[in-house]
Image (cartoon, rainbow over the protein chains, first blue to last red):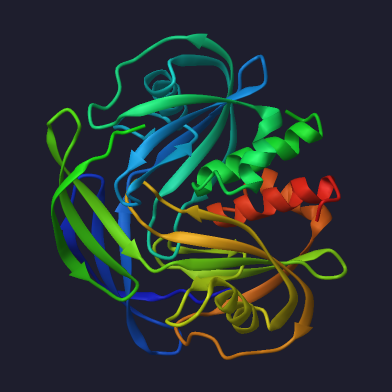
Length: 181
Length: 181
């Protein structure tokens, strides 16, 4: 590879609540100049909570950009001073009311590499102990428990509309089918 | 569910090349008012090309928001007048040089439901016939062929950093392990 683009200038045009927007002027290897739009977002985590009964705990919440509520694995933005693990433990307590005694990282992905730097670290959480923390006052979340045996149908039928959730649950199914998780 | 937020006003603050940015004022069920930031993006498709030798064709490209090049399944934005299938067929020819005689939809996901309406439809493409279309002049893409047997290591070792790619390949592995694909 080597198609590194030369950055000619960076211009922050919006500083917001959960995102900032930057427009960069770049020069391609061909010499051609163009712009690149970058939505800056803090790093985030997502957690697949798996109970001892092999149930996955999902959260249903209204997502304003979509105009509908969707099922997702619990997730949230890393706050100042937190490690990814800290955030996973906090969000799990805020959104589903459990603290995990077993927390394993599954992967780290960019959600929209074409226009955003948002990165999300996904964990599997097991050995769950009831423990509640107050959550974000702007969020309204309902927890739904889904047996692992029902997850293939959930994925295959289009009921999971969130990419990180589809990624995490597909990987869990694959690893579980090989008895590796 | 029912936590529908009442939209008080919508304000388009940036109209760009691949994204627009809208700031909406909303009222929550609690009565509290807040803002929601929405990055508008055209729908997109992604394609998992699987050869008769059970190799997956991935593309490596520099992503300016990340400052690095990453491995992804081929993908692109739906252009005016195209169906999702049309876009999948066009992008596959532009990015890897094949036309699929078998194209099956895997799923449809939102990439960042917290702040964007971007939706991506993922296909598995088989029965590939060489066929090249000229691509986007701002893109510089290298094709890498990966045996399906090597995909678990690729996913487990953190080498796949793109969420749609991790989602598509995990699902493919799971279905393939069950001989359903």
